[in-house]
Image 1: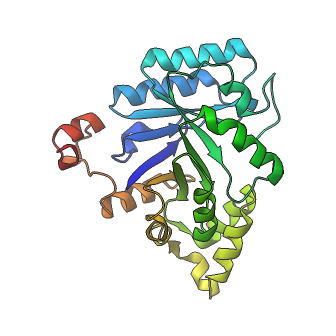
Image 2: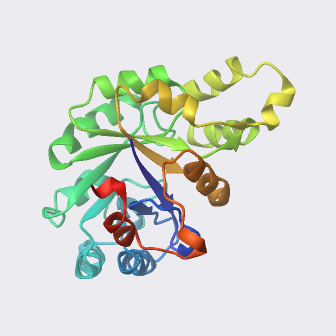
Image 3: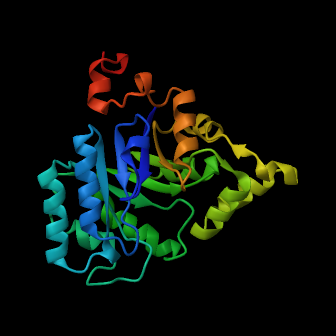
Length: 264
């Protein structure tokens, strides 16, 4: 199985777990130059950064060109091109517009998938957008989900590899809150139907339950930490999904691979 992690431009890289692929979000209001700089820092630390390119947060073609150039000049080889959850600040309103510029042709491209729909767009519009974007992409990263049947059904309908969005270990009460924010109705129902007592709401939910139910249909899992990076890091190491730094000394991912069974 392969895991990736999502961080912000403010995340301290010294606390990152030993995973190769690290996505850098561009939250509303974030300067794209900060994201490009974080991607550069990740490369220098031996990671494979995947910066977000949210269409609605990019003003115009000149800004997009500059953002792409900064990333490529640093050695970035991969990007996640998405719509972005906000009103457009410029001329772009969807990820397809960015993809059609041709600026990403020599990069590995991920696009967003919404198996449970989105509060920002109708299901029919989502289906139409996915059909239009798929020929221009290499893989799909989904919103985070908890209902395995919904995810498996979505994967069965795609022609691209699907990286399933999951959370790190979080209390069920927190999962319900975040599910409500993103409009993950099936996940909310799944959580409620599998939570028998009020006390259960305070217990961390082990992501392995979902991973084990889906590993026959995908080997890729993308982790949304929701600020719980410390607990996520601990969980990854305990389950041998990420390496532990020897003697507290930070190694780059490339250094780790050179001396690891993973590379042999």
